[in-house]
Length: 322
Image 1 (cartoon, rainbow, N blue to C red):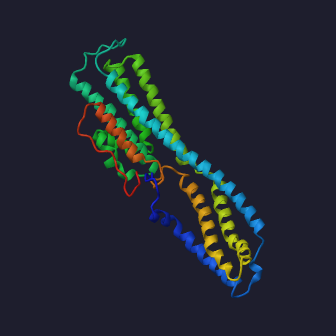
Image 2 (cartoon, rainbow, N blue to C red):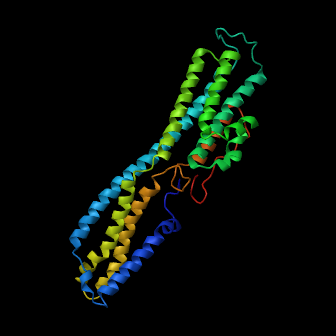
Image 3 (cartoon, rainbow, N blue to C red):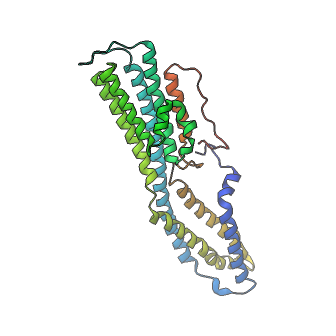
């Protein structure tokens, strides 16, 4: 996610240079054919070009609204992941505290060391889960050893990494541990167990929402025709402008070059903004900063456990927070 208030010129040029060069060359050729070579048939009425431009503006505006909705939904889903991760940590730390009245369970009790073990196991697995969701959405399984494995037991990590949907299996393991805590250790009563299951269900829903966006591409009919219509308008633009500028005086038709390039760049930029917002989980500069969110969750959860040696929050790299 780009975090600087104003885009740097190099960032603008990075996305604009191809279209600027293309339309500069094209408009120059049109003007050369129209003026020095006297190919006056290139001149077309401005009115239909303007009408087409209005229609294209409405169309790409509609597409951009849909693209932004996908980005904003993705950001809201990760906001939910932050909140429910904190809720899970609170429940793990405050519910798993001592022997409770669990019908049918005859447990000897839990030592402070055992309670610490369960706290770390449940909370660290949640940290592993959020990082696993991030890798799952970005299709980066090669980062498992650095992003997920440090928060799991070695055997569990090796088992989980081979699943097609490791985050779902990590939540499944959380549920299995809760069953042990309730049925075998007597450290959860029925109410606490149900409450924590509800939290797991919400985490599954949030993961599923992210997967829905990831696995459902933006409708191609909107994305493709938006691009196509912008290109048609951009190539017709100098043909409609050249006659209008010639009315201003001899050689004024050369003004077609800068003005057609400017208008074409604006339309192409608007279309590109929508294109870059379609898929918010691709680890690009305008995407949801999942890595930074995962680090924030880790800091919050480990601090809840009383840890003091915490990793620092991630900082933007070249004005981009990943």
